[in-house]
Length: 475
Image (cartoon, rainbow, N blue to C red):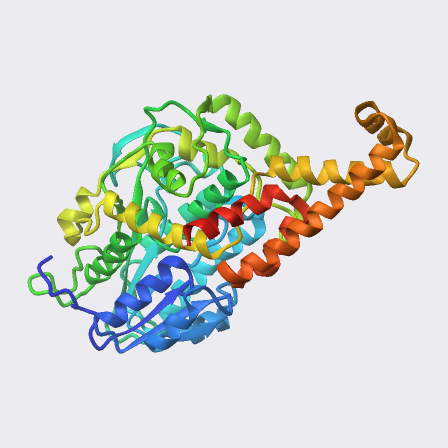
């Protein structure tokens, strides 16, 4: 396509489903920058890290649930183009909530298609996934000619639901408007690789948190395994170009949009091993990088074990106290089996070329997460937590209460009750003194987290205080 950068955007109205999310908010802001008349962010959430910026920039927020047809009608009425980004079940505990996954990804997409038909929307760009053709099978430099994975062979409900939804979207291409005014709905699907960038919500924060707690002890698969990533700016560009590819008034292609009914793989064009990709990020945050490797078969066994445990705990999956599973089978395939795709079709038909290299994108991502670390409460691994908290409780209980097993265990080390009680009093005094010192120091070097430093140091003592002292030294 040889179009201006704002073709089909200036003076037009847009709805972005999932508009408060990482990709959705970036897309909303870019649409406004390019001259859109109206941009609506349709989302179930009331707020997100980007809410304030979106409001300041003039994005109209529409709160609603995509599985509610009335909410969808309200969000799509009167717009020229829809970017359907809303989804559920991509990673973690969400992957096991099968009913909600199908409701959002399949029924929600059906509601979007029906609302587009009802209100005469002319363009729909669907954010899909490469998992519609990948289910643990090795793919090297794949393209859009690859067949869909059979629905019974998908390794997780998210991939299955996205495959069904994408096929619904593409088969709806060319559907006449209900108004019978000669207009049609033109659709296409963008299949992004794993998304990264400053503020990314799903992949990187989870990896970073696991590394911080010392729960990222091994790599998965061979070092030669590669997969795709896509930087946020490159993905936003691809989505906008896809919307331009659905314009039906392009000279020489009247009523035959080039992207109509087509899927497109989108990436940075730099397939890389996942653990090598995140190595610079973890190193910059001073977190340990996995050294040992786990075969895919072993990792799958671990993932299936967590899947069974969390399925049993299904009623509590949304509870705050239930942490994310360490690993699930679909995540093993994502990082342990080679699968990457070329974006040649998007380049030839849409004019897509990454505007940000992988090195530039990772540098910006590292800068963001370094800054976020400086603004948040830092601390030791989970092993330090277990050692310190369990050890303190053991000493205190053994010194004050007649618990035979604990008391006899402690007396094997300190030899007398008098010494045990002195040890308990000394330990508690040290923790109290260190926590008060931490609070005073934090009021000077990290006032927003002073209370957190107090309680963490009260529980962990020097194990927490050393992180605060390091932060004070770097100020």
